[in-house]
Image 1 (cartoon, rainbow, N blue to C red):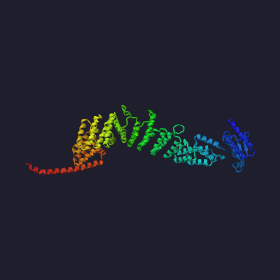
Image 2: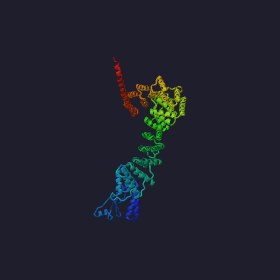
Image 3: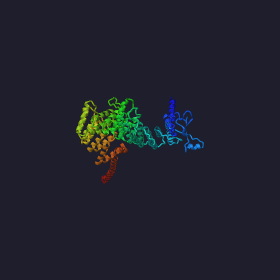
Image 4: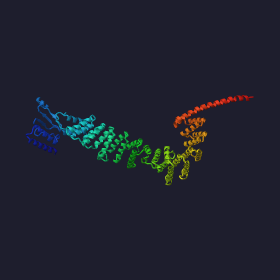
Length: 636
């Protein structure tokens, strides 16, 4: 059916040619070429009438039966190669390839993934290297296929592709399309040419060519590969505005991969503000980030102390975990939670700290508690509440700590922070105390550590009466037993506030209650003995510490040594030095205390010991010398 229609169409055009007897041979040939090209020449090769094997039109001879899109031509034009060869009795036959056939052959080569042959075919055809090829103008499709072959061919320079685009515009008045520039952008992406990709995108905008999803993807890829994150972010914003990053198959782009590649580059450059901006875009576009990417973001936010970025990531994680349910999609590790909550505690960002703690899925009210966080995590939570001036939550968290870790001590920094918060003035102490009383009355658990913080606050401002009253209320109202920390706080306060005798009474009470002395307990006893100038008793406390395997604190050792040196207690100073070195070792001593000061004290101790020994020996020798005559006189 198609063959019949094509034959009728060619016969119609042939009749038109016969009706024009005045046309020149060249015009007839051009008209016939136009008719054949419009009719699809190359499919059947019908270039001559059926009555003869060849058709003479003027000085041109056309032969039928040629393959698709090809024809043989001989010429006797004066000066032509065919004419000169005809003088020798030879006929020159050349092959013609029309643009339609060129497009088809290039398409076949592209489909066969032979980019090099695509490039060579186009360049040879355009340069008329195919013998006798007439100067047919390349089509837009041929240029696009040539550029696509260049994009896939490693040996083609970008300048060749840009020159081809200029040629199609200037030489053939062809209008480049998005497909044209997509091939150039693809080459930029493969060769990591960020600046070239930016120039191509600018050219597209200037020429009114609307980029599509492929254009944006290749441009962003080139800029990311070229190490230009800010340039890529600019194109990504334009891509997002154009609607190509919305979820769904309509755009043909996977937004998650585009966002992930850009975020990784932003992380490497530590551009956390831009990271935050991209994550906000992902939240708005309902695009779930990669789990490993969120872990890296949490680490980067913790390193940079950026609580806003950490909160954004935690919110994303909370959303993803809520959507995933119990599928085990991802779980935050204790280390990641500690890093984030530590950042939140430094900034007092309770929202971030609580959201991160929720990701651990901890249930403190379960029996036994499930997924208990690490102790440093809970300490950081208390610090975060304190900095946010939420003492009730801080006290409640302290109760959870004592329940989850009953045999662990509270962090000294955390406890000091709580003490500072409750002891800014007398009003703050009263407020903290009544807050604990209200918590107890409403059934909220109150721990001994929270009451100890109030007692320490009273000691800090020097109000020992209020401190002892709070200790009594600890037992009467809160129905709690005083701990070692309670006694240590009171004993340190008594030693500092000129009540050293009370320290010994509290120590006796501790022994009666079966409480074991701590290093702070011994330090308070040493301090009290120094205040009372009971140097031997102070040294006896050190011996008791040695028997109890308790390491003395730096402050107590330094205070004791200074007191011995100041009061001229050389023998006690030497004994103390020997006890410390023999019991704990010189290395332990140096690593635990201020090595310079202790070394100086020990050196002075040794020099004084030698001088005193020499003086004592001299005195004893003189005494013996004086006693010798009297002894001789007493002899019978």
